[in-house]
Image (cartoon, rainbow, N blue to C red; front, side, top):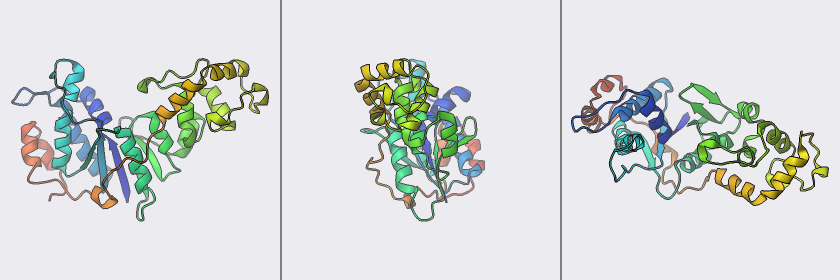
Length: 282
């Protein structure tokens, strides 16, 4: 079986900017959640997803109302959670932890369970590259329909998945607000981390470096001057795998959409047409 772990926040973001805007009879913006419901049904149908869970950073609407474009998106997160419940899909709404940590924990927990052939993390976040393991744990960019296994991680970043947090610490990650270490780029970080997989492995004295890197003295000095910052950036990039998720693998099994919830929810957001695409009801 294949286990799909979905970044609900990323899915809602892409639906907000990819699906047409729409309002329900109450005047609420529901365009993104309509798209989200449709894309979840498509995942189940096309990927033959038998076990899946969706993680959200929050399912609480903004207290100040939907005034800005950002609010128009986050105001739909409670509806996205309702869409999952109506569809019969397990959700992990995070409070103390990040959704990324929940997905990383799920991947670590289920990848070695008997019967699991592959865990697919559906997200576009670079952080998840550290979770990739051979072809057993892979990433799926549903926007570009591109999968990433360990070979692709090495080709893209120049390092093994286990060195991704260190690579991000040096290079930075705009999407997560990490500035990186001045002077370090993708190629220099890959070359050094190939020789020394962890930041702590990099010799303090550049004369001891065994890798041939352009501007090595400058890079070494920059890392030395910002050593504690580099460690902080690395720690911020490491995904947790110990989130106390209550669910065993069998809780992720999709047993069909709920007849008692989905028709009414689809009518509420004006998306009755999706009911024709449901292949299994319960």
